[in-house]
Image (tube, rainbow, N blue to C red):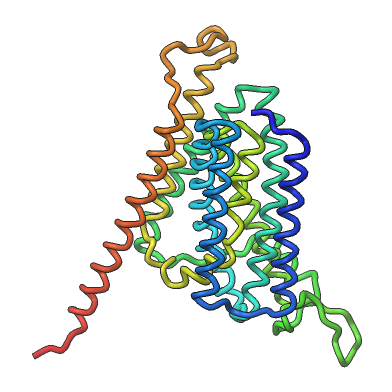
Length: 339
């Protein structure tokens, strides 16, 4: 897929403009979006991604379009998993609802910057060393196992946010006020005139470090679906755009997606296996089959990858909603009037 420089330039300009508009809107009027407002924005970004995929189909063919859709679905699902952590972080720091929009927007900008850097590094590594797929595949399989374990542990334990070393250092080393102040990250103390940081800065550090961890998972996953840097980048952009509104739209629904981690574990495990098979198919590692490709390693077609990803996420979502509905009915019966 040969993407001209002008296409990259237009894509980046459009992205910057959209982020700038969001920043202006949120900066001028920080608020908690209504269900209607959130629904319209989420629908807009989803439709935009679907139209973009059609454009890829028309200009580059169905294979690349399928890679974009599979990558977008995977990254979108991982981004929804991000929201679980964002909910815990903002609950832990007691961020006022009207300021949460700004936190999410800055978190999305940080995620885009970090993922852009990882995409560039990943593309450079893959172009030079095909054996990187072995590492990516092993990392995704490890991540899938951890996700499955976390999902099992979450059945018996309340998930809590554990502050990392950077957050703890920031609390000790920086002068931080006790209250938020109009969503700004610093204020001047009226008594001493000293510049102090608000808890908003600590929240941003928490969101930023979380984005970094999730980028480490998501970038190998998308490279397992497509090795085209442009598709990797645009899939990530469309997955993150609208995430802010999705946070307010889903609301309590996030807590009902009890099997999402299991679904993501299956998806990441599948992509990990796919990466290892691709590495075997184009093997150049001397101690594996004498440095020759392994003939029995099959290539998984993109239509099968897309079907497995979409089917797994659909099953996980439906199963989650059925289970939580059943649990709710059981609780209602258990707390009903006794004769």
